Amino acid sequence: MSAPTLTREVPTLPALLHRAGTTNPDEPAILFEDGLVVTRGDLLERSERFAGWLTTVTEPGEMVAAMTGNRTEFLVAWFAAAATGRVFVALNPEAGPHDLTHVLTDSAAVLVITDPESAGALEAIRDALPALREHLVLDGAEPGGLDPWQGAEPLSFRDLDVDPTTVTNVYYTSGSTGPPKGCMVDHRYWSRLVRNYLTERGLEPTDRVLCCLKFFYNDPSWLLLSSLHAGVPLVVMRRFSVSRFWDVVRDNDVTQLFTIGSIPALLLSAAPTPRDRDHKVRFAVQVAIDAGLHREMTDRWGIPWTDTYGLTETGGLVSVPIAEADRVVGTGTMGKPRADMDVRVVGDDGKPVPTGEVGELVARGDGMMAGYLNRPDATAEAMGDDGFFRTGDRVRQDDDGWFYFVGRKKDIVRRAGENVSATEVEEVLRTHPRVIDAGVVPVADQMRGEEILGHVYVQADEPGLRESIVEHCVAQLAKHKVPRYLVVWTEDLPRTPSMRVAKQRLPRGEVPAGAYDREAR
Image (cartoon, rainbow, N blue to C red; front, side):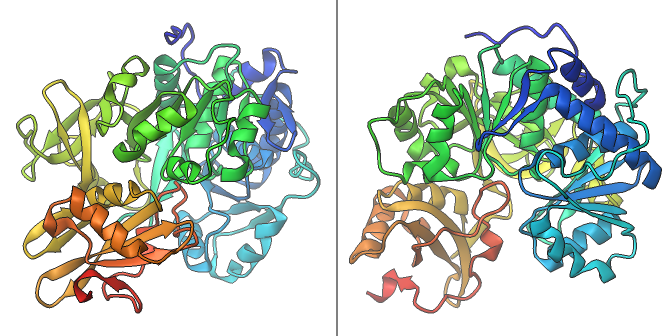
């Protein structure tokens, strides 16, 4: 099906919500997996009421943070902040005291909203947060947890004079070194993400998109905005679950999926059932499809899975058109550049490399981040003098314009003078029939400088498994790329908010005790 032509421009956040909330206000905006339904009119009314109160206790430009699970109040607070010129900081409800203190200190948040489950974590560090003035703990049943905080008069979102260059959100993104940086985005950023999704994928009146991600990540926000703009409900899981995923899809007539990280690999780990194709899904969009799993994904669930690529700082840059999904299964391509972005592959000197050669992906265009909070040095380094954002990702582009991910510039193992892409080794490890997911890190080696350590997540350990995994790698990788060491996990690997393996939390540097050493056999 071709994507519909948008007849209305995507407005600022409060204008979009006002239009959605006054057009068929009794229609659902959000369908939670447990049966809670939030209508478009109710979402607007609650946001306007909280915005009225917010103007009495905070000033424009001040930071308002939220640390909750996937609850309606998180979204209410976000819309209210955007409408009043406050800046919304999304906090991971599972963050430890070190990360939480850094984010709230760096952002100088003056108000923090938590659910009861997260309240203790905030109070434990409150003395270290001199800027914090208010701590609101959601009180009452959802969606009314913010009802105790209402202005004498709601702030009407109708015809608000909102500058689209005003920063709406700060997202803290972790790099390979140093503490997380606050990535600032504005109304134009959200407009571009919504416009791209609706233009490329389309949302018809009978469509429903599934959100299986945590709200503090940025994807749920543009999924909701896209659904509101198109006039369809967003189906929301409270948290991702392999066992519940397809039941939620079936029970709510979901027609489009958006997944990230290792979600497909985790779904494939469940035993096949006769109901695998019993659903209404037309296609899935996945950030970073594993080429070795791609065919299995399409065959098992009977739908096209299309790749897409982007960063929090840039939004979407590259994607596979739905019309070409079948043709590129298993090729490893992440797509072609979006029409509204200038995307290039450059060498260390910043100049474009010849077609087919590996270089760094850089991008320029409207609607990217407004910079890193309090980090003009990092902003200047990332953007460069030419306005191209340096992604830090190594890619190549073929003669037909398709892009292929090679690996992070810093995510390599330097083994005996050879650069080994951790991504390449991980992709091969995941194609072993017993491996659900994998993370590859370097360890020190006196002879070779660094050696390759693979952490693999399996459903069950069994005799001969390690030897089988090594043999699998030997059959598919050059000799110097085969992991020397393996650590087998029978519980899930640590993960980032975006469902990727949190490799910074994997044992590295030194060989862990008990690791399998293929050279010691």
